[in-house]
Image (cartoon, rainbow, N blue to C red; front, side, top):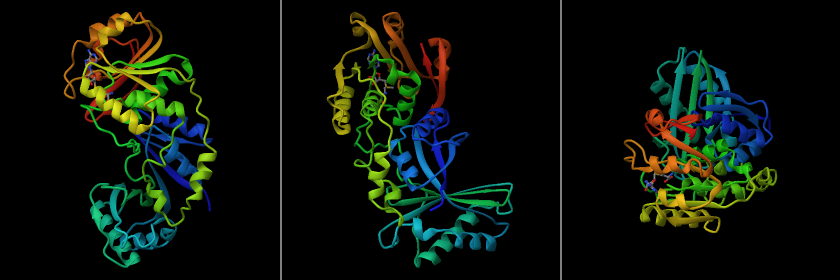
Amino acid sequence: MKPIDLIVIVQPGLERYARLELMSLGISDIRQIKGALLCKGHLTTLIRINLFCRTVSRVLCNLGTFRAGNFRHLTDGLASLPWDDYLPPNLIDRGFSFCLRVHSYQSDLYHEKAVAQRIIHFLSDRLGGVIPVQSSIQDENTILLVIHIKQDLVQVRLDSSGIHLHKRGYSKFTETAPLRETIATAMIMASGWQVSGLDLLDPMCGSGTIPIEAALMAKGHTWERHRRFTFMDWACFDPGLIGKALASLPESCCVQRNIRAADSDAKAIATAQDNCQKGGVEGSVSLSHQSLDQWLDEDLRQTMIITNPPWGIRLVGGEWQTAMTKLTNRVASIYLLIPDHEIPRVKPRKTIFQTRCGEINTTFCLL
Ligand SMILES: C[S@@+](CC[C@H](N)C(=O)[O-])C[C@H]1O[C@@H](n2cnc3c(N)ncnc32)[C@H](O)[C@@H]1O
């Protein structure tokens, strides 16, 4: 099989960290655009990115590129693509559905809904039945197709991931305003904790996303036993490929240190405890029910704090800032994810990266 064009979707702001992850898999020649990284690879490359890259949202593969200035060209182009290699066999009988996203720029086929309808007709004819269509990805049985048309050049991109990759698959109870796992990973990577030799503390851990991700990274944990990926249903997929993909993964480069997490809310700690257990890291994360100012009595000189304090409309801020300021001279470093509107008040020393959490623009910074 020829190498395929891969479109690695990343939350804007995290591209740099996803790129480092791709490079650690030996992938070179990576083109970075806002919200995506473009590279080439074989099926094992695609599988490795899905299983290993912790800052990536999903991986699409380009089934083919063709010119289409009208609907007949579109149907001819679609007919030339290798659908049988990729789509799950008997997908209608097996309850699969499609979710289509069409984006057209500077092209004669500018009517995105009409293009989507043509594609649904084409697939129904090809697959011999009415195909169910969803407006969003419902579950592992929804096949996402992204049609990108620019200046009449059509790319048909098939999703290989399924459910968003931030859902690691250990069943997670969510506390108020949990953090996406992909962002938590980018925070840990950006802080340099993995190679710092320092202990890690999240003193406002909520449901535990940051310490759990750190523990999973330290273990070099992958997700194939915890969740399904769409590529596992493709006709060209052979389960032996998973072992092959895993055999060539890089060793975890993390120097094993203590990972601690705490919260002033007893319910949050119970949730974090449960999540640690489900993620298989209960022995790697020490949890305690305590408030931020109680850390002032401890020796934290060999500790890095990485946390996202309560903020704005997601969670009303408490008095965390006073305690955090007092901790500044007692710990090795403090990294915070805060909303942009808090920057003038918090006055961080350095901005590391900016991204969005839901509707909120946020900054990851060094205090
Ligand atoms: C935005 S949430 C953290 C979310 C977390 N990163 C997650 O993934 O679930 C902020 C947390 O800080 C905790 N908190 C607020 N003030 C605190 C304080 N003074 N000491 C300790 N924890 C505090 C809240 O109980 C809440 O769980």
